[in-house]
Length: 145
Image (cartoon, rainbow, N blue to C red):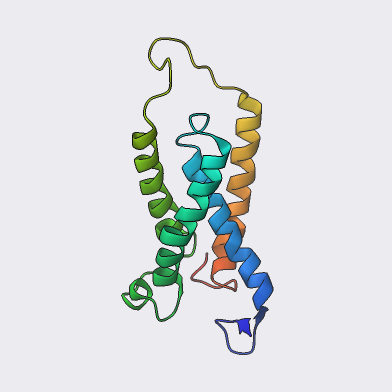
């Protein structure tokens, strides 16, 4: 079994699964950023497993599977705007609301931990997203540019 969009060009299924797993991982990271340092790590792991299973997978199936509801409705989502950003954004908003404000918020200064590391992470994400765009189409074409 292999993934393909163009006739005669195939990507091994395990490589395609690994590529798709990067979307799921970055989605969990985006969500956790909304309530970082306010819940236990074990709770983060449980949340990520449950969210991945009951939210990410159904939306990814609807958007990226050729027989999926939103795919059939004409949704084209190469960079994960629906599956990653909208899905993770809603989960992050709900999670942050459920966890509540940070202790000391508005009463004491909360300076960022390390701006250099923040910039490095943002730069790596920015460069990596170019790979997500072209990789999601399984080819470089006029649709991915």
